[in-house]
Length: 504
Image (cartoon, rainbow, N blue to C red; front, side):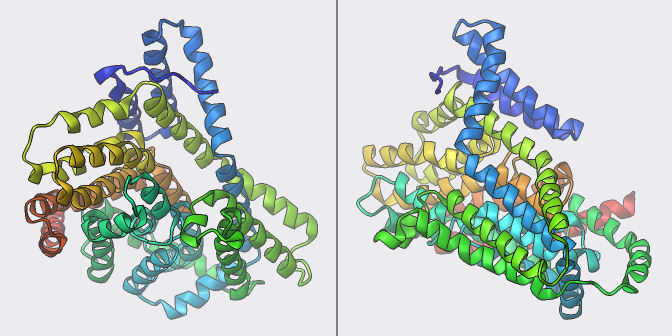
């Protein structure tokens, strides 16, 4: 189908700003995203000299195009959520929650275990979000840890981990964008300079160990603890009934799903025909993930039906119910894909913002800092890290080549990836943010509100780090200073929140 790009100037930033502002103000994301898409289409149609009726038709043309482009993602999510529902109905989730509750007896251990699981599932961020949420949600509920905290840990160990994992779909995507002889080597070189990803992991671990929450997250944690008495009463009533399922009913389908998803990505990408593994898994990762989800579904069938954990009719009904439960977040995804498509492919939002980079006449030492800020704004407004670094990486390589500043290429590429991940991490319209709240079964806007102060604190520290890295051309000083500043800021924000509560 395709649309002809029209550069609409500063007006191009209005649709994402409108959608984000409405979502934060109204706490209602569906209409906010739709209004953002409508405003973008009106801008495009008026700039092209078309009628309002053409704008309305373009809305659904864009939705059709994005659904077609992401068909495998939709199928994967439907199959994965069917597996999630079956696991829960089999009693496997409840049995795992009871078992893990005996092993993970503290909030600290649960937070660390969730972080570790998030780091281990580094192949794909969307797969990470839903899998970690499914496995750890019963444990968090049992230990009275808020769903908001679970959603944050999931989100913070999804894209920030994938962007520094050499074997992931992200690594291949980044390497393919770098116009270097060895793009993969260039990607590896950016890892120490990806301050946002590294400091986010540090923050998740420190918050889990210390419990030094602040802002809206602390209030969410306090509410979860206050609700504990009622939850304990309900749990005592449920404890009388022994669960039908066993821990293996949760673990085996998920393990098979993970292994087959990796094998599926390798198969689709041609690994078994001689293509390199790192290249194969990045060819069409969602197609491979779909094969893994289907394998998990077959495993559940083989395990549950012969043991009479559920009848065949009930098995099919649970599949249908599982797919039905993914419809609301899927609608958010379709609308966010459409808004991103309008901004990137029709009205030139990315080109307008990135124009500031090429027109800035600042010393080269400021380049990593400037690129980090621009990438963060672009990714936050468009809700996509891939789209952001896809636009910025060619510009960065051209700037460094034109200025004869090859030494600044790797630090600036690292800043590009870091800013892209920050915007993707906390944007309300990012698919990773949406999937994190879905995996944790947390209200989407509550996830955004509680996570944003945490993500933004790390981003501010990173901005300081990139000023240091830009003038020292080494990541290590910036990283050490960043860790020290981050920990000090967490202590300060925790005390500040406590003081505000006392004054209130």
